[in-house]
Length: 106
Image (cartoon, rainbow, N blue to C red):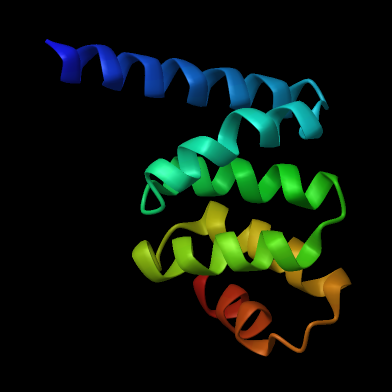
């Protein structure tokens, strides 16, 4: 029973974070999503939303770190690669696998 409530709370918080992101409130989205990412770093939905929030905040390196881990988990997920490309391009971090893999995957 407690597990079900925990899962419901997790999903509700993820939905709230995604909504904050869609309504152009990335700082608030990070506040919701970062604890979820700490709790479940292999949850790709959390990573995509957190990475998207970091992109909107121009925190390129943080976005690349989060999204590159997600890409390892789901290498065929186009949303990860499009966000990763958006994060890696302006960061100039010298992370060529992002653009190469984007070309390959998309």
